[in-house]
Length: 151
Image 1 (spheres, rainbow, N blue to C red):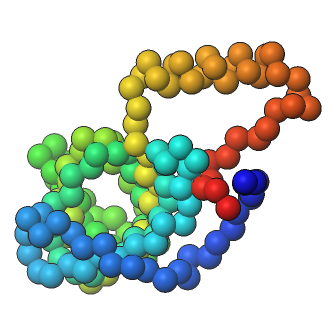
Image 2 (image 1 turned 90 degrees about the vertical axis):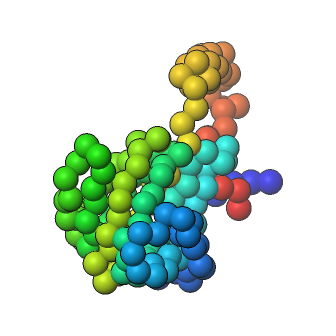
């Protein structure tokens, strides 16, 4: 099975329902949808388009997520941060273990880069393995690595 070295897509994608956990909803009836654009070969990272209608809800992160707001606006807050408004063009990073209260103003669409963190020792071992492979495997025999899913 071969992997494409470069994959392309467009943000005009078909979104599928991704309901927010009902116990997380604070106010309104927010309707969320998403489309996964790419997934890493190891399944630990993905890129997606996500959108949601107006409402207030909690979100608990069990992965790192970097968000680029494409359309609309949100207000985020938590115990350590006062309500702050973010709109198109803003970038937000949520660390694994974070909690935020979202208030979607009308509608929001975001591009999200999600990554499940691994234990530090595992990342170190992988870097050592890749370094050794680079040293001992002749350049003609190396295969490019890919963060994109199989094609």
